Image (cartoon, rainbow, N blue to C red; front, side):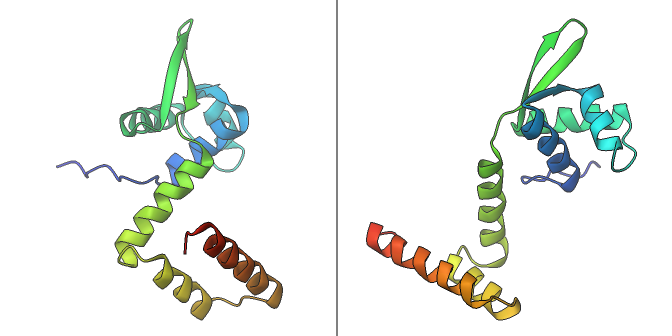
Length: 130
């Protein structure tokens, strides 16, 4: 029985999207070559990953001769938002407050970072978002 597809990006899928976000669009060969600069990436594996990404709606493609040229269908910011929304739901009961508390409790935050956070909270309150 096949494993169900992850609703969020896997590490390999994200690596492919990172190449597309940097290049705007690329062929399977171009992505495989770029990924191989860091660790070996087989053409057929990258092609399979593109098919998965297309099914998830994360990439689109057009045909140019015999090659498919792929483009990201979501932005980095949209991918971050989806991943964060999934993380919030799965581990923090949908509460950004619980996530923020966890981060502050478990990670060192210097004074400058705390000031930046306070400024963002104040700005959100002023907009009526908090």
